[in-house]
Length: 101
Image (tube, rainbow, N blue to C red):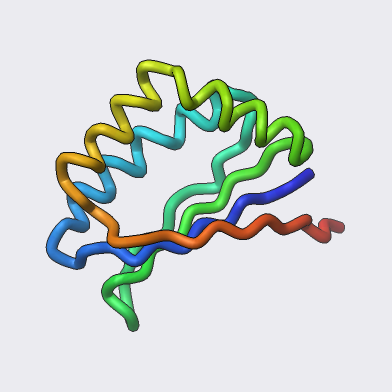
């Protein structure tokens, strides 16, 4: 299993729009075989950092998802929503493997 950790620098004035964008992606990751662990929005502390975590059975499965998302109409609609609203300034993506009991 591989877990993708995305750290976003968000526009604090557009948190409602970012949340709408995030809610679009949760079912899309599931649609393509992943498990979404949620988006985590600013609460206390830094007001411009958000995080998303989702897992796929393997890095190959994640790459298959990325390729499919590139042409999927729902994924493209989510991307267009962010292009319109500019809810985040940048993001960093890391891949991790969980240690579970």
